[in-house]
Image 1: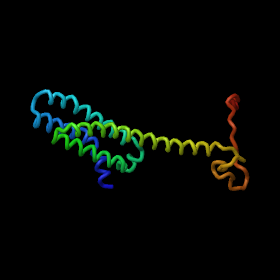
Image 2: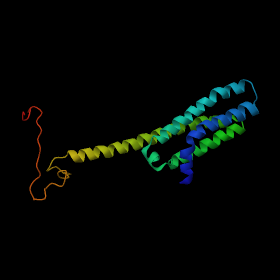
Image 3: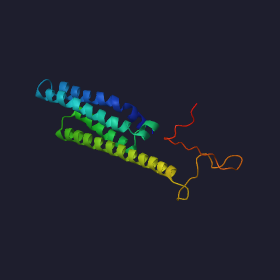
Length: 171
């Protein structure tokens, strides 16, 4: 749980630090100044934007904001993704670059799917509550009148009917 909380708090910091690590590690130290450096200057902001988008989708979920922890799927994906980015900052293998791109796409769609699924279930619960409240007496699932149904005297509660066409008493 502590690790998932650390990932939650650090995902936006990682969106700045990890692309900067790749730019410095690969672009400046390993490859020097040249065409490779230009590729890193262009690619690293895209990586940062992808990481911010995934972090935003993860943070948009109510369960994540309430518990301040990412889900287990998010934790696994973010760990592998961060390790791939750190590794690519050290070694310039094409397979690592492909892995970072694939994990970026998978991370986006996983976060979007979890957001969609959670929002759909919350919306269905809300609609079930509305339908429960809208049922009429005599229908299955009717919960009774709001407020308990009877007054202290044992009489039926008073009902106020508002007619929009009736101007009401004039003073």
